[in-house]
Amino acid sequence: MVAEVKDLHSNNPEIARMQSIFAAQKAAYRQHPYPSAEQRLELISRIKPLLLDHMDAWTDALNNDFTTRSADETKLAEIMITLEGLKYTTKKLRKWMKPSKRHVSAMNWPGKTWVEYQPLGVVGIIVPWNYPVQLAVVPLITALAAGNRVMIKMSEATPRTGALLEKLIADTFPQEQVAVINGEVDVAQAFSELPFDHLLFTGSTTVGKHIMRAASANLTPVTLELGGKSPCIIGQDFPMKDAAERIAFGKCLNSGQTCVAPDYILCPENRVDEFIEAWKAQVTQSYPTMLNNPDFTAIVNERQHNRLTGYVQEAREKGATVIEINPANEDFTGSQKIPHTMVLNVTDDMRIAQDEIFGPLMIVVPYKNLDDAIEYVNDRPRPLALYYFDWNQDNCSHVLKNTHSGGVCLNDTISHVGVDDIPFGGIGPSGMGAYHGPEGFQTFSQAKGIYKKGKMNATKHILPPYGRGMHKFIYKYLLK
Image (cartoon, rainbow, N blue to C red; front, side, top):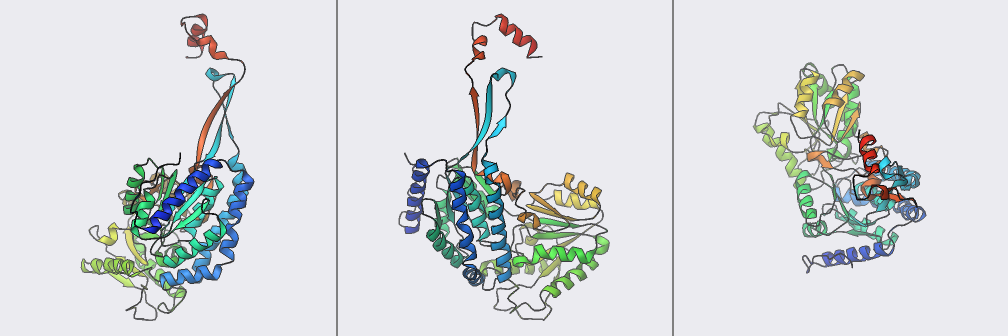
């Protein structure tokens, strides 16, 4: 019997369609619960042409959704990183699917035991607006590799990209295998309340709490990829020009609208002015103009734009020092673009210090020594990523052992997200679970422990009545 789906908002045709697809996927999974490696590889192989053959369509859709989205950033951060994940998964899948041999104790002899990785069933993926292609398709690849059926809910903030993915997925897969759902907040709410076998959500910590609450009604396991304020610590002796260049990769990409973008800089107090000048020079070199520069990505919508400008206005009113980098002295009135802006002398009562920034604003905080910087990080919720710049390996080890974060880059920013063979995920307020690497395959699989006993039944020797010689032998020799 297919799992019962609550009839929520039945007057909404998209919700009715979504519920029908869910029932069809559950039924299809029951008919074919364990696809072979060949079948899984054939499914994920369909994704490559879906991306490559429609490159212009992807860049156009994202450019229109953002008003300006750098075509190169779309190709690098959406298409290329997804194709690398596809290549990696294709190479590793057969190895992941192999049963894992385990060992039995003397109590279980003679017998053997192993672990098999079984598909969960129907997986739900809720996608944010900042990287809607990558954050839909990368987990899709992993879920298909694990043998599942998949439903994807796209963000209402990127409707053109969502519509394009829905069309291309429908052209590529039957809907009982993969389906894309679009719609507003009511559709997202109904989606999160479906009794999925696993639910992956990428987005804000606030919304993540609602997703987890909705999933709990069905005891649906969740993977939450949330955000937070990812710190960047610059070591006392690290070359500042190199630090600015490497930080720019993570902060300027997508105009800072990245869950692992550096949120604040912890800089040695005697080098703050040096960092300010190095950062100004780096941003100016990358973006000598911004307003009509197609390389400079806009803020996704008016709501997010108002949120970010509100942070700056409040911080300025409360005494912060605001340094706007606007090399061509352009007027951004009426534009969704915001120039890169540094904010200093920030206090904890400012919203910019409390919320994930998710934009081209960056807090700069001076520190006296490395332990002070570590303490500053540890006084705050555990971040999704942490970045430390230092050639001294002892200092690097000290930071790694004394801080908690979902992931770490040493002497770089955000690159760890593109390393397919390591897990990607948060901890505490920045999330739970992971979906990259072998850990991702395991996230979307049931690790089923199996024990098999042979023809000889040694257990009969320890059956009641107790107190016989075999029991005395066991107690004497095996329970030492």
